Length: 198
Image (tube, rainbow, N blue to C red; front, side, top):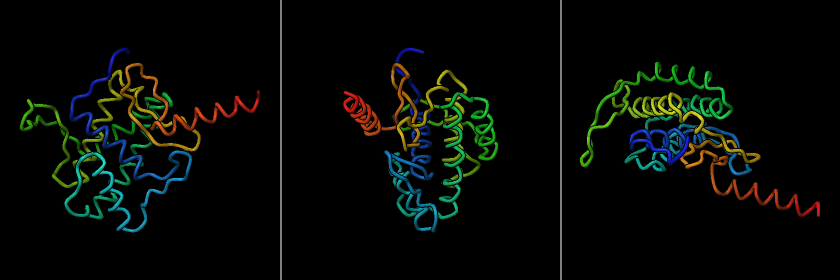
């Protein structure tokens, strides 16, 4: 695949949301240090979800409901398995989990029109509940990516002690790190290793 990867604005926003949910709501490592997902007590869960919503441009006017927040934490764990499977080349496992997510979220396509935009395809849940809408949208966004030649663009950071995810929208499709900091950290370590052998 050559050229810049292009998603419509809705697909871009739900894939960005999937990345933020996985990276903010699942434990693991980020940038070389352990990362806690703050998924214990209700206040921590709602705070983490509010942070994720704010990061994707949808800051909540009040704390998200605890039940919705817990559902989004569960969704993030399931979406992590999609990114991991796609990143390792196991598209069968990624597709199986996406199909399960689509069924569980009751994702349904709908044409929506923005104020200054033409009609575009969006995916909605069975109602306007926060978790239902984002869960359905994220599941559909991942389905659009894996069901196209963009499947290889879902990645997990290749830096040591980092398991944060990303969507590679670069021209050459060679992105390996979730952030410039991880890329710099790996380059610096390689430089130090070369210098120690001189």
